[in-house]
Image (cartoon, rainbow, N blue to C red; front, side, top):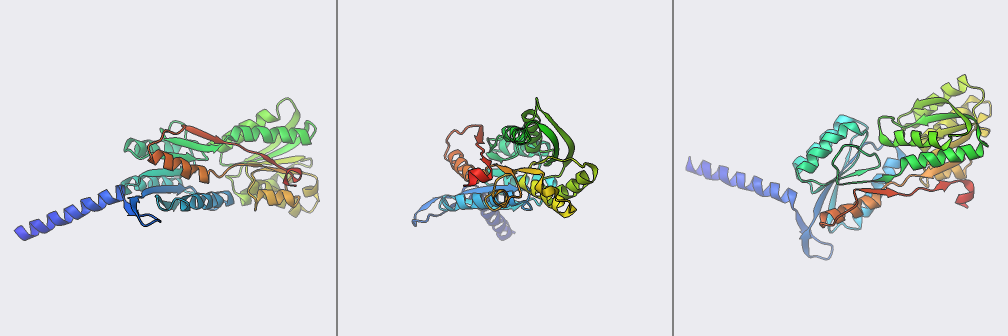
Length: 314
């Protein structure tokens, strides 16, 4: 009986040590020394969108430059909110030192983020803001400003009048809401009308289907405003497949501006313009290191955009 009790205490001690190691690991550095290695949990809402694949690649590349200091645990929520909520809870239970999340939606993540911070785990939110959450830092572009710039651009190329199709992102997310309100402000004071608006949830196939519907209903469409480049590209494909040549007369404008996607579409003449939305990858790792080192960081870090047209690509 005494031997069993001692064995039980030994196992409990090992468990406690393992838990402590998960919270404050130590591993050899690249130079062969011994130093603290921080565990960072990164929850990506989906990898079904090219922009998010690039975000992950940028986070990984930035983390690789500090592999002697940080270990990033990547999770893909596969476009499912409950799965991503569970990932945040799991990261906390695993004892990670910091969490980075690019959330699918806003409201469902207020409580999970607040719970993590309350338990002493800093949280960096990327891309989609979560109003009401007590996160440590938000990093993203100014979606309202980007929408505003897109609206002004379309107003300019249409000489202040015309019919526009708006293919929105997921409207339960703050970027889509801001890209819409900014666009409305950008075309204000003109004779431009949004004759068709659909929530395409950032997905090219959905945008393509909605554009087919718009084409069947409206003979006169002058421009398409896609909340991301896949939506604008899907609209272009729908117009081309229609067989009436309208893909040559409609102006297609998107957002994201990845070199191999939006910028390529502009170079190939499929899109008239795209607006760069930074992936926030490098900035997220730089900010994480500052937080883990005890430095004070800004609550909100807003990254700039730029307009990509054939002229600016030259």
